Length: 313
Image 1 (tube, rainbow, N blue to C red):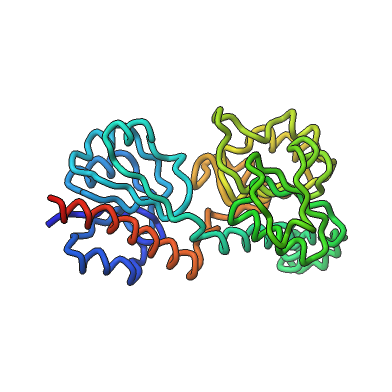
Image 2: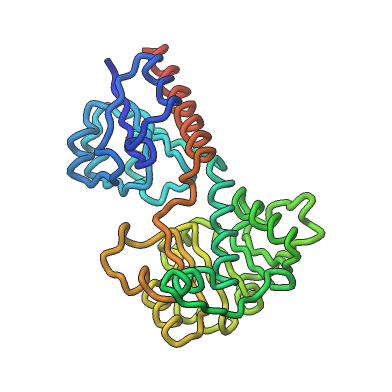
């Protein structure tokens, strides 16, 4: 029986009903350790006999792909492919599919929640009350604030809709400048440099830079508005973590809210435990709705490739 590898943490800890379609189609499901990101050794042990792979955010090396002798398709339960060795996959003719937009609602809602929590200093206030204090920390309102959105794909557009509804002045940067539809009258495309200088809140919803270098480094942080809030629910590599720590320590950056870290979970706590950091554990797409949509899309993409290839075999 052909096998399909399942590695996303959200699926190995509690396999959803959508995976039953693969079993019904005649595939044996192979799971990595429940609730954990598999390392290279575990992948090398599991992948050799698999024809399909429903993959999460785990880094995949060329060595793993070389060991995947029978692999035909990798289907991500998200949109990013940064963790995949695309050149090696293309050389082998292994298809790569993504669940585009499936987790957009969950990630957008988390980004908006982070903006509000940072603006109203909710974590500091709640921790003070929990410690029997009564802190009354003055916050800021989203209404009238310039909110800069970097990346206007499915997630960025959802965030823009919420911010517009709350009365923010929404600035956007996207090199492709996709059509904004009903948002066009309320959202203005500007160069990245202008957005970063003008926005009191900046939120990232874009892929990695083509160079692989951080988009937000020390020089960019110096150009941002003093006390700005920076939100990152996209990719850890978009920011220089050391530069963000320095900007927080110098009180140049008001708050950094992030769902992603260079190392997960981070062993270096300088960023994750900083008093002006709101840190979450990569939960942007970890909602009932997002997991269901992403899994269904990933399964459909697997079957699209595997069923056709089985029929022609």
